Length: 336
Ligand code: P6P
Image (cartoon, rainbow, N blue to C red; front, side):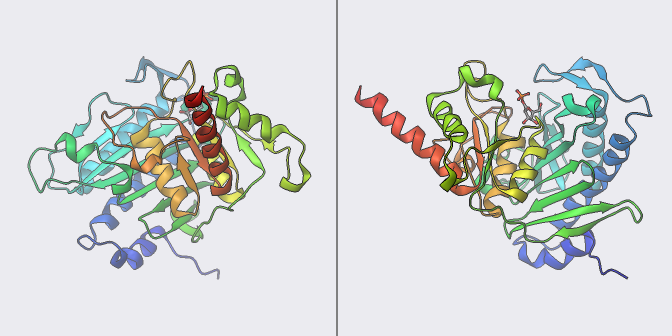
């Protein structure tokens, strides 16, 4: 009989690593795990249950909501409400955050179903979450409680609904991955202490935007395509167009993912609070690096809930090359 450790057992085992009151984070992560199982069930039967396709409404991003988006949003919100540990939820699907006015001490920023444009074509999609402890002790949640730098996250994770469904999270003591075993309905530890290789030979970017990339990114993409046997170039281009899937591959295999600023996306496309901060926390905890090309993602001071940021993330040696290109090109621009 293969020994296995469920997410619940693991969280309880590790809760002494968590500096706050015993059990709070355990219950919060348990609530997220429960909602993830429900969303997984719906994602896996999407093709059969007439819940594919557009919902007929548009979210705050102006993106047409897919039915599964709405279902996932409702599932995570109700699970967090029931659990009682969360006092405020910032969701990609809502313009304003949701003040649960509970006694909970935790704030959850969440992208309930990222990559939803891939739902109808059966490509992996994901949930991304970020957890902060409120700064104020009680009363109404303030903007200061919510708009915290990524360095203050107490936990972050993602769920990948793919060929198998995984939940990967960190509380600042490394990154651990759990695979859902449908036969027992439990997430079981499958990837203990995940580490990203320091280098890689894959780059991940929507090359269709090349003409609008900043010079440093154009220069780096050209480097990726050059023949240089010593550094294993040309690299392979892998781009799924689903952030969680692209970054999960990057952690496991090494490589670099970039969604830079461009003419079309002046501040980048990806959202700081519920996409880039959680993924940056996870990648750094796995030994990787995450920046805008110029600034560490986790040190960005947010000034609004749905703000976007450029993202350069992955194997540290590769991200450092991009950052050097930004710095060198910046110096040339200043001296001319
Ligand atoms: P593009 C999916 O819509 C998403 O938010 C991320 O999951 C993904 O990395 C990115 O957008 C893809 O954007 O412009 O390449 O289609």
